[in-house]
Image (cartoon, rainbow, N blue to C red; front, side, top):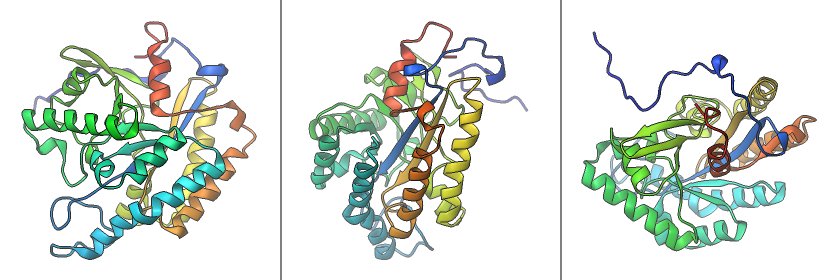
Amino acid sequence: MKLKKHNRYAYSPIVERKTDYTWPGGKRLAFYVALNVEHFSFGEGLGHTPTAPGPQPDVRNFGWRDYGLRVGIWRIFDLMDELKLPMCHLLNASVCEEMPQIPARIRQRGDEVVGHGYTNSERQSDMDTATEAAMIAQATATLEKHCGQRPYGWMGPWISETHLTPDLLQENGYTFLMDWPADDQPFWMKTRAGRIMSVPYPIEINDTPTMLSRAQPATDFHRMILDQFEAMLHLSQNQSLVFGVSLHTFCTGQPFRLLQVRQALQALMQHPGFDKVWVTTPGGVARYAATLPAGCVP
């Protein structure tokens, strides 16, 4: 069998990267919190579920997802205000049109916005080229209008792409994407008109795969956050790395889960090694990495 190749980037083992660099302030570990803010069509399309899906209209699971936007996100906002942590929001553009209070709070906090499609009821991988290009343009314009900033980063709904997604994003002014969890450092990807940066995004230190897909308890997620931090802080003594924590409004927004995330973030911030950490956003990582001398970013 001849394996197909994507030709977006070359193989680069992390142990052979000889060009060293640090993050701002001489820091070695970049840390960010990403909040997935997702909106779903009623009675159709894709959707996360905490239990078995029901026949449409599946009001039990739709209502559970809607809890994240009505209740969960506001408690997460308050927690991050209390901890004085920035966030990046992987934001479905349809949220802005129906729930203007959410982009208003994002603007008030000065948080970063990353394009996350129009709705999570659909996948980009199911779209033809014209439909995907139109969706990217619509989502970008909607986010810019309501959030006061145009997004320069993108992660597709359900982390999905077509064969042309990196090309379409770069041609629409995007400078980085987060769909490829292939590294602990940013790396360049080829596009037909140039290049676009891949910024690490966690699919392991991520609440929904952990607590919904694998049905692990919230206490496991707490432990995973701290173990990942300890391990990456140690590894970053040799190479600058990126450590992200990914949350969803309807998952971490549940009080018993939010308590565990609160305790994990508090412990992380009280760790004696936290002063060696650059607290940032994916956009901060991408902008800084793009200024490094040629060869630093593989």
